[in-house]
Image 1 (tube, one colour):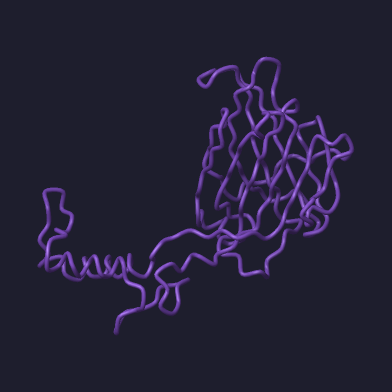
Image 2 (cartoon, rainbow, N blue to C red):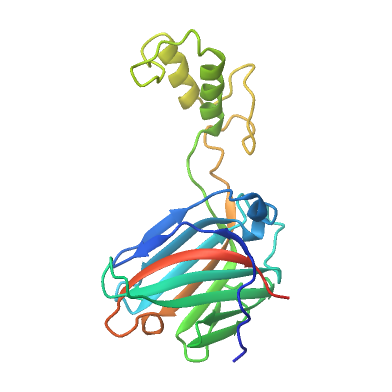
Length: 249
């Protein structure tokens, strides 16, 4: 087993996610300038969930927001899931296991589960790579990341409100009144499909789509770990968060 080098300097952090008996997730699209400068270090989502028999824990980290298909895992970034094991949700006694992965390329990766297990191989196929004892499985590759958001309509509304702030009727909270006629105009912008004349398309939107994020992709790292490698004795409540780091050279 190769020894894991100490974590390098942090690029950015994923939002914390609590894992109990159900799946949890956290999203953090477009991070700090340091992470944005290297999209492969920019975390968009962190997910954690048990298998139905609670025998295994699935950990997933998405990076490379709006992945264009030209980016690759490489040796400049180290990926880490920080998993703490407790006996209760509010317990102050924790045992932390770091699940850390590094890449030489898209087809050459290695991952450590603390000092308990190790796997090295090609994670890019559907079956991924599996450790010698079968307790760790890893997949890494490009995956679809669609979600609905009418960015064109939202930005049109924001521009309309900013431009007409002096003439808009607002409620007690200062929000635009959605009654007619201005409300009809705002609702039309938020629900529009084809772009109206004079409307701008806002990156990454183009054309007439009101759902311009439906074709977005990310690069995903998914690690399945036997629960016995993460639980400590009776401590079976797990808290998970993710981070990326400059890989030690």
